[in-house]
Image (cartoon, rainbow, N blue to C red):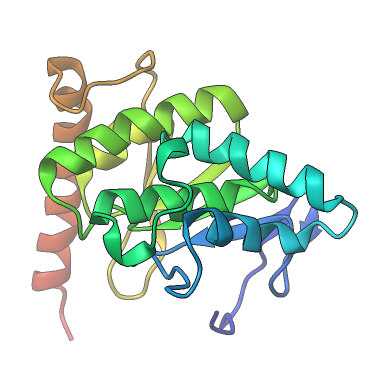
Length: 203
């Protein structure tokens, strides 16, 4: 969304220079179309698949609504949904065109704690079923340890990869488990250390 100052991003060995059908974004806010119902919003994403027939598009939309647990709400209006349900619709819409990479920008940040925990389980089950590459941005250390296999810690100014952590716990993971807490503590220590270094760095 912003032009890079330098460096290169590669996907399958090819440079990424702009938007592409093989990469889709799920934002912090649902960004749904209020004039379309739930089914219409998911169906809209399938316009990226011109080779599909209308019947095929409808079948794909129904599949992903079932995958996110919203089959019973396919004809509901967007304003009738809770925050968590809206994010499930956003997730179904992002997954429906079958992108190779799903970019998730703090998608659960605005949700209450209970809804977030439910979605942690949901997204792990969806990942198990579809095996998508997901790049997940978060400021929540436990969330990163719960959902990520690789956690990259960025330095604040300038934003560079400072450290990498591997989380090799089996799935599904419970965000409140003792084993996960140990990984989160390790990441948090590095985060605090980076913060102190920034504060005392000479100008």
